[in-house]
Length: 93
Image (cartoon, rainbow, N blue to C red; front, side, top):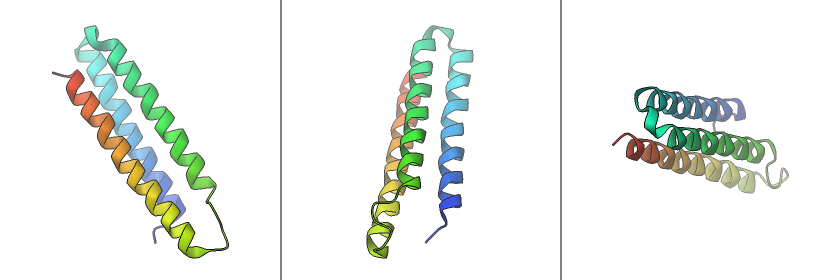
């Protein structure tokens, strides 16, 4: 299993990519500023939620539950980031 540090780095990296792409959308499409800002707010909310869940595992005594917990965090991270990038691509059309 990957370390907690690596998971947090992955979360930060992917959120930074969404935020930087949102800023580019705002820069190149000033008429879509509200959509870009909304995506940034969603990305920050997703990051805070994932960090909160990563820092507080469900049950520390049972390693099987902890593994499932972190696996679910990683899946939710990928789904959330994919959703944000889909919203961003719709905003750029």
